[in-house]
Amino acid sequence: MILVTGLPRSGTSWAGRMLCASGELVYVNEPLNPERPYRGVLNARVEHRFQYICRDNEATWLRPFQDTLRLRFRWHAELPWPPSPARYLKYATSFTHGRLTGRKALLDDPFALWSAEWFADRLDCRVVILVRDPVTFAGSWEHLGWTVHPRDLLGQPLLLRDHPHVAKLAGARDRLEKVAALWKAAHESVVGMRHPNIRVVGYEALAADPHFGFRSLYEWCGIPWTDRSAATITRSCTGPAQEAGFAWRGASKTAFRPTDSRTAAARSRLSAADAERVSRLTLR
Image 1 (cartoon, helix red, strand yellow):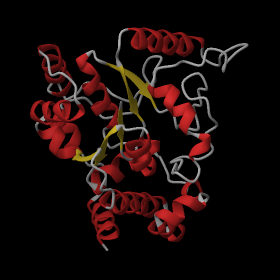
Image 2 (cartoon, helix red, strand yellow; image 1 turned 90 degrees about the vertical axis):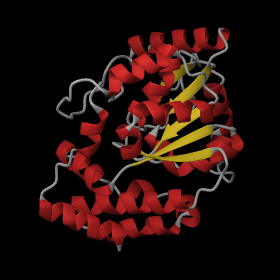
Image 3 (cartoon, one colour; image 1 turned 30 degrees about the vertical axis):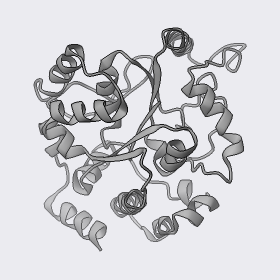
């Protein structure tokens, strides 16, 4: 089982899709996203963005995630009528087919970042954490008009206990400062994650040489590298550069779009003054 995580807009959908190019995995998109709950995939109630899971609260989460990773779709959880019939059929079919054919689950979930050690330790997942340069990360959030809601993290006592630096989010004032504070809190947490099942990967380095980078990840995750994998990654990562955007696609609703990965990774949407401010906020 594999978890691909990292803050939103750090390339998790892209990396997850490229790992699934092997044909050996079943792609599961953001089961911990509280805005798109889907009980057939994860039969638990998600209350926070960046839901923190550890041994002290795992009773709520262990069995549901064991079922998800074993590709056991909860057929009755969304009845009498699922909110998205197309998504219901898509996951019901992919889970059943994947389980019967011996495939593994790949979770693409940026909201699992602070729970990465729990996934690695208690569920024996191979966890790939994508980290992105703070300036291009903040620029992507600014371009999309996204903001950070500190209460999502500050309202979780166990998260504050185990990652006390997250409390610095309380002092952030405007949107850019909140995004910078989120990046710094995540960075400090990831630096302290030492589990052997966790591998931290720089988004920019992966984008600069996707063929080499993904082949290394395939080996580490125990996924067979095939001509199909190589061709899909080449086609998806070295095509014509597209204007960066954000559009949910298909029943699994991911943000991934084929593009030139080097160009996408280098794109910054901040003014020089804002870029300097983000650099200063994340380095201090």
